[in-house]
Length: 114
Length: 111
Image (cartoon, rainbow over all chains, first blue to last red; front, side):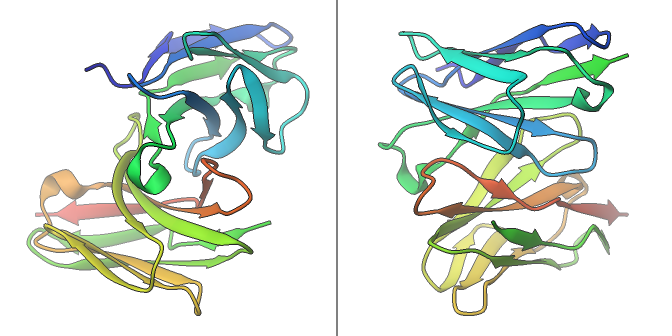
């Protein structure tokens, strides 16, 4: 059973460009959350998708947007990239059927903005 | 919002015990999680506490006091592979599935 997968693993972009990151949730999970983790910090919640809609959003600007597909996979889009967007982007999947509301994390995408 | 505080770094020797404290301020508390994260890797689930008391799972134990807004993760019989960042995270009743993380505690295990 595959866990949470993310692509690409690493990405280098320049300021002002746009980027799309992808996530496939763990089998049986229907909820996907995205987090941004700067170096030396804990992950910060960006937003969460369930039933193809954004259900919760953290304190991130509108440059950060997302989408969830009928197969529960998800994309994170970031427009007009800034140097400060350089971080590890983590996807977490979950389901109300999981005990503890446990979030299962993917390996992340390391984004570097030059 | 929530404030979640944990020490930045702790060092201990192999075979020893280390206790990582976490304090939080939140409304609508709905559980506290501990995750382990090795450098450049995904966080992996260690424990979950929602009621007061101690949860033991092998070499790792986690304690919660809701009235004090306090938790600790206890790592016993430390091994070199336990060198990692340990993240404390809180979930609230109005935000199912959304974790609020502390900055993490880097544990360094020395021979």
